View 1 (cartoon, rainbow, N blue to C red):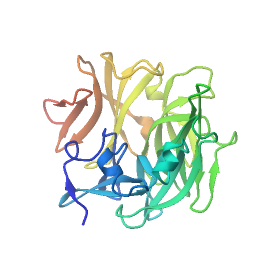
View 2: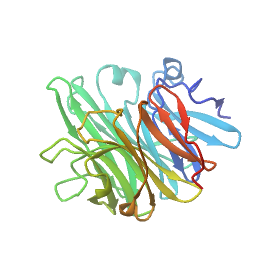
View 3: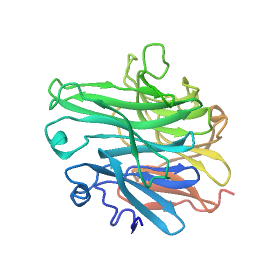
View 4: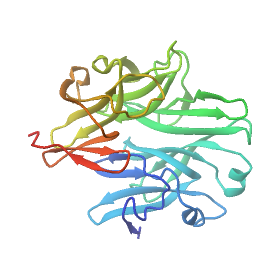
Length: 308
């Protein structure tokens, strides 16, 4: 049986990054496992996936090659995950770094390596797949290659149809997006936020993607999306943003806004709240009729009053 754990206390991770709803359950990919977990399969590398069930959190140290496991989504009746690493410790220590795509048919208990792509020059850099977005018949994968010797970084985006994994090219609307985050909304619709590295300016943008075709979410033009989350009680979308869109600027004490939209029409998002904050807000959530905000220092704030 998988061990019960407390996320943030004995998770076995150096950091906690993001949670996902996966087929109705709360999951978390293991971004960076601790040394004790790295010894479980030595010299093989096994990454972590966390699933939340009625008995609490369970950890599955079963992701082959998963030095870093970055994201997980549900698509085609299976769980899919991406990250980076190597098949074994000697491979990793000699700089043979790969980006990975994994699949689980057992709701996260075990994982199969579906595809891995190496950084072209061992020892010279890093490569990762970081974000996933299912779009109808394709699973879109967003990542990067970083040559730290030449100080060069580029996107490494691809799409997977269940059989073939194909790098995105100039004919693909999502080719040049360096994605900071993604959020599946419906089977055909999703959000992507990040930077268009093919553009003239390095600015943060938010796009609505439908079957792999993107359109900027105009209501957030000129702003930076901090977090996006679904309200499972109403099937509505909450968008937390701050003013300004210069790439590289984190959450600030500038004007914050929360927009509310239906998941099938995010372009019609309406302003719900606007305020200036002295806290560095990092995330938003809706639970039991209340709005909650999380800060970079680990504080949780609850809005006064009810949103019902």
